[in-house]
Image (cartoon, rainbow, N blue to C red; front, side, top):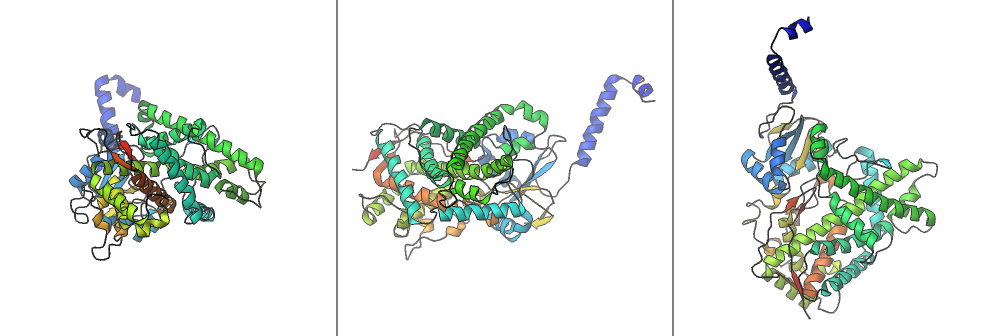
Length: 495
């Protein structure tokens, strides 16, 4: 009967009927929501919006917030993705309703490698696996120096070597300060994870540091949420990311193999040794490596690029605000002097420097929160977010809120200083490391690195534009995090 029906109608009519039928089927099967957002196409959802956003996600998300309000949604195919803006809404969602909104989406972040599918680490895991890995990593970092004088000294030594690398330019233009910062930050994390630092001209180390940067230039979770045929159309960048992932994985595997050969349960040297000490010898070697690799990758990779990128933003902003830089220098000169390195423990005596760093972090806004996943329906800001929805916090909506920070685009460290006592205040108004149970476990290490490196750079150099006519861009380019557009500078020695 079907054959008779098809043979007796025009082929064009049949094709039109088929397309309309599939269109209607997709429309009625796509979840509906009262949450505002742009029109979603059948099959594609809001891919046209994502295509327009490109690597300007920061700017375009602000535009969407202005158009649709503090809670809005996009569809990636049929998958709803809700963005939450504003301090009260974000706090309500990820602190008060953390039990419902602390999970990660399943499957979007898995990477197939020659070693197999990576096991979940800290950032990507859920439930008891997440709690266990987080406790283990934080305790290991504490045991190996986080928050202690010993790690302060290690970071100060890296800052000293970074200053030497910059001094070697002799005031000539530095075209990519981010590369120098990445090497310095990566070495600190390398010491915690692998137990030793690398020379700044170590080609293997430099290559893996560059590969780590590549990992963060592609927002892979969005890529994996796209329909398969769309993935194939735009797969070039993701292929580059997968190559970088394999390069980093090879590096980590090599370091782990070295540790296995020299492992002594009575002399644990670093995070890898601690991990090896917790794994029963009879456990499957392949699974053991994949699980350990993911934790090590997150510590080594995420701990490197996010911190280096934040520092690159800080330097960019003080190039445009030399008066703020000079006030920091004068405070350092008065309190610490010019003959010793600045340590993180000096921060309580350097309130203007610390307030400046808080203000620069506020403006840098390198990331929104990592994607969360609702485990049941939840009411936030007057809207019901359905179960199985991807949810993220748009942190810049807090940091650039004019009601909390008047003239938010201006650099004013005084926002974080008490007028009477001169002490640092209002730290809780910032959330650059996210908020709630999923707050970054490496927050203390990152703060220590940033304060030490930034403080020592300002102590040793006057950082300035190459030419007064140089126009600096503060818009940023977005991958997994938001980078400053390339810029150049000169570093003039202070003495």
